[in-house]
Length: 183
Image (cartoon, rainbow, N blue to C red):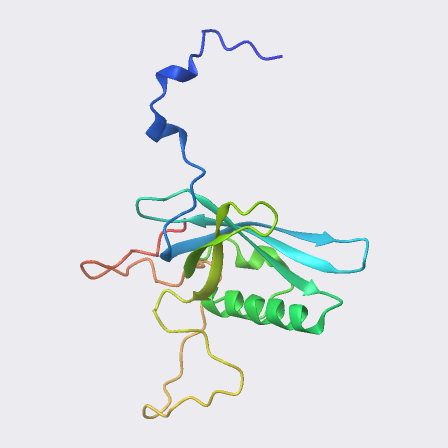
């Protein structure tokens, strides 16, 4: 038991400050993976449950979920989930990962839709696609990059720099988001 020290009246809190369970309107949102959990099933199937969070805008702080069938008895379901996991890795800039936590708190763009749930028929959000913040869709397997001129060696990222990519001295142009500050 915890004594609050005062009476708390939930009716004194305006509706708009209590949050909403209404699905987000369809569209593109700046998201980040806030949490992830591997779920083993009795059937031997295994899924990755991702908790996503809206990073900015009117719906900042709202949560969404994506479930990926990482290991599944259906080869098609498993292939779809592994493609989506690859998209998350590319969109966040995480590259090859060994732990789903390597995806956490790396902003990316998520295309969100509204669809009825199969079990209840209620409308809910679904993540349709993910891409990097640079507005470039994730590369597809087998795609051949077009030569844009001579290759310029890129410096290696220091472990002390923020995971979001921009250098601390970077100043965003007007209208851009400053991603040098970790979310």
